Length: 593
Ligand SMILES: Nc1ncnc2c1ncn2[C@@H]1O[C@H](COP(=O)(O)OP(=O)(O)O)[C@@H](O)[C@H]1O
Ligand SMILES: [Mg+2]
Image 1 (spheres, rainbow, N blue to C red):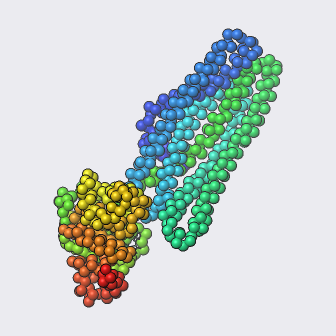
Image 2 (cartoon, rainbow, N blue to C red; image 1 turned 90 degrees about the vertical axis):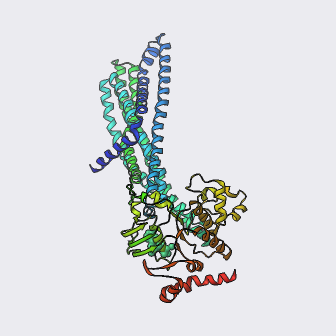
Image 3 (cartoon, protein in one colour; image 1 turned 45 degrees about the horizontal axis):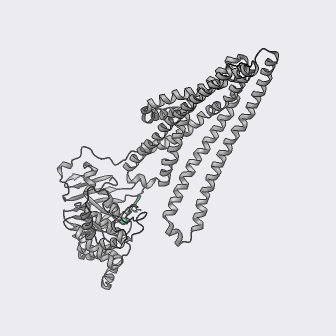
């Protein structure tokens, strides 16, 4: 009951949102299907005059007319088949692309937290496998309901027209066919669901492996991966083969049952022909209609299974389309109180935050003021919550308690557009698109001229390494930017920040030890970038903490201390320890260079 209920809802939704708009095409297609069904029945019916009039009565006139009629019916059926097919394909493929587009739109709006709990392989499988199976299902169900049932009805009509009693006998056999076929359909549905899940796991593991190829190689773990993914490949083989095996049962089964029916019809009908109560033509026409009726009845028997399979996919597809972000943009935004591209004071008041599924608070009672133009350094052990604190400013995650304000306006009252254009984020793990350097540097910015790009590259100390690429700015950087070193990627991100020219700079300094030459280059370009900006920097380099207007020490999600370098060295044991561990070694680097 419940399942039927939800099936009805999904069907209704599919119809309203994706099918209704194609009503005109569908009506034409249904008309063509009616022609095809009628032509099939006419072909069966024509067996009677062919046999009785041409072969038995040797009618000279009909020897021209009947072949002509066969030809005309064939041509009409052909044309109708063609249009029915292309119109249905149009509706089906249009549905695929609309569903994919809607899924994409909804995914792009999802919160960061959604992506930490959803696997990208599973998502890809929903875009490809589920959307495909849904559209195939809808396509088949429409054809089943219209073309196959009409064909069946017309053929049964021919049978009843010829011989009422015999038709009743034949009709009794059909339920015998429907039962096993619908059982097979149910089994197929279960297998198909497992196949869909298996396909998702397979894509997930495969992409993961390709991304971790360096780790795999350095641990000599090729065999581990081969075995791990091999299991999935084997699983998919088992499932697809099983599905094909179950499917293959249906044909011999139907032929056997069909054989019984035909045997009975030949016996009864044949006796009638011998006794002269019916003509051979009528008998053969009846038999032809009966034989032709199996194909549509077979499709109709699996109608429910096809529908259920498509519904299961539809549920997974709509699940993505209906995902609503929890971080909601305030559309009554108060942007107009602030000026675009201007620095303001930033305040954290009593801010607490916890990631989804995290046991403890990741940030507790954060009170912090960052005055406009200040350079503030965040320091703390790994896992203390520094990156988390930066993530809160562009509202990548939503705080549970407290308030963050820019120029006295709560960030929750600002539009995403305004808020996010105010921050330039240079993170540790810079992921570039597999496009040209220029594309990556100007990403998301409109109407940037060649000269501005070159200027930004110069300021970010990118020009030198860009010149070394044969295609310069037009060089394609490879997946995630593999052709660039860590320091080069960071400088690309800095060039981006120069172009974006936001009043606030959020910087997560690279922890990976850069050689002192690139370190110096990055330092120089950052110095230029920070000019006239308010910056919040997660510091891993000595020079950053020395230059900072204030240093914020974060420990276990709390602000432990705030001060200048020299003050903190005296007042905080944690800071002193951190300094010895992390920053002091940079002094030696400095001396070396
Ligand atoms: N997406 C996430 N989901 C759940 N927990 C997270 C997530 N990102 C970070 N954390 C946890 O939050 C804490 C702070 O992490 P982070 O801010 O990245 O530390 P760091 O100070 O090294 O930058 C860590 O305990 C980390 O495990
Ligand atoms: Mg971090």
